[in-house]
Image 1 (tube, rainbow, N blue to C red):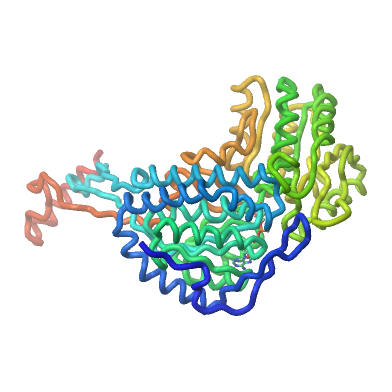
Image 2 (cartoon, helix red, strand yellow):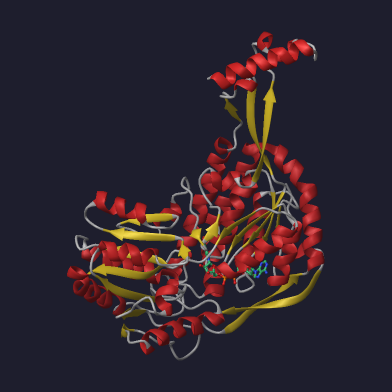
Amino acid sequence: MPGMTATTAPLQHGRLGVEDPATGRLIQEVPVASGDAVREMASGARQARRAWAEAGFSARAEVFAAARRWLIANQDRVRGVICSETGKTHDDAQVEVTVAAQSFAFWARHAEKYLADERRRTASPLAFGRRVTIRYAPVGVVGVIGPWNYPLVNAFCDCVPALMAGNAVIMKPSEVTPLTGLLCKEMMDAAGAPPGVFELAVGARETGEALVDEVDFVMFTGSTRTGQAVMERAARTLTPVSLELGGKDPMIVCADADVERAANAAAYYGLNNAGQVCISVERVYVEAPIYDEFVGRLVENVKGLRQGPPTAPGESEVGAITSPPQVEIIDAHVRDARDKGASVLTGGRARNGDGRFYEPTVIVGVDHTMACMRDETFGPTIPVMRVADTEEAIRLANDSRYGLQASVFSRDRSKAAAIARRLECGAVCINDAQVNYTVFDAPMGGWKTSGVGSRHGAGGIRKYCKTQTIVGSGPPLKRDLHMFPYTPKRSRLLAAFAKRVYGR
Ligand code: NAD
């Protein structure tokens, strides 16, 4: 099936400059989609979506098989583009490519199973004998709005189940990282997605608002504040939303933990993608008996990390800060902690020179009066707090308006599982962190102000559908009240039937 190219967005005004955060250089300018352009895309998507829905799961799976082949064949180029507009390391960009390839395969394989018609044996005596079927019908046109930290995974991977369900999708990448979005458009065209089925609307807030106004469902990933604005706007048209928002993920390290494993995990999951991960380890609570050993190992690990532009695979562990205002937020958190008496054991400042880099940072002597323990930092900082026992750790972990994820480290897996159940968040990893993101079979979503709804699992594709319940007349028809005419006799029978039902 022939595809359209990314430059075919019908009406465009204005251009967007894309910067390489690792060098500070302007690398490309791309046209912005105006409100009118978004409306035209939505109208084209509406026309395209019926044939796409009717094409069936196998045809759609074939497109994603081709997209996966394209991604793997072009992975060096994709990694290069991701690195150039985010400043992340090659390894961090590789994670995006690997997760995306896995996502295409997963949804191509499982979408049909999750959306198959469901038969129910009704327990209702009033519908006795009826054949009840629930079917999942695609909502129509889905708008996917993404952030800048994972331009492939956190934007396009949410399009995959929406498309596999039979919807047309318009994706709006972050204005900071639109180039990966352009590649996704190229990939879907090359894979044979019909014109109008997958469109790209490049732009900032205005483009996002226009998209929210036009679509039948909004899948939003970004900050809690913008998520609230999106939900408010979507309420005007009663458009359903799914929101994946910010986090302040706690790590609890129990006295019986494997300290080396916990410290390694804190360093990696606190600093991968330069800490710009919604499910980063953003705060650590360590039980007193192992606190000194944990901090010693963590600081040693963090001091050895290399930071710099993504020149080649394996050349640095910690990349750049992608979005310009983020450096000031990170620095404000570190300054606030210092001002209130915390100690910075390594790092603690923005690097001088080209590009935007913030040194990998470990802070101790922190408490919950400090912004670094309460607000999302979204940077390469790891604040560590000594706690008397697990009770204190659980209390502090739950003392947050966020509830995205958490991790618990203990050699006693039953104890860790019991702690997990007391944590107020959407996912908990035991002796690990972040890994649940790759478990596509299970939901990932935030509690409290970290989100509404979830991605992945059955719910992660059913949310892109409307349910339709079909109640058919089934045997045995002779026990059905409709065999009697609508007369007083029928009323007497109904009353007798009601008596039997109430008597049960
Ligand atoms: P952001 O909220 O600033 O922007 C996200 C997207 O919303 C961008 O594409 C932006 O252009 C668009 N937007 C802005 N205003 C809008 C409006 N009024 N209507 C519609 N769209 C609008 O977020 P960000 O700074 O790009 O991303 C960082 C945030 O994303 C962090 O808080 C992080 O935790 C969160 N995040 C969450 C997850 C998750 O799965 N929970 C994943 C990645 C990132």
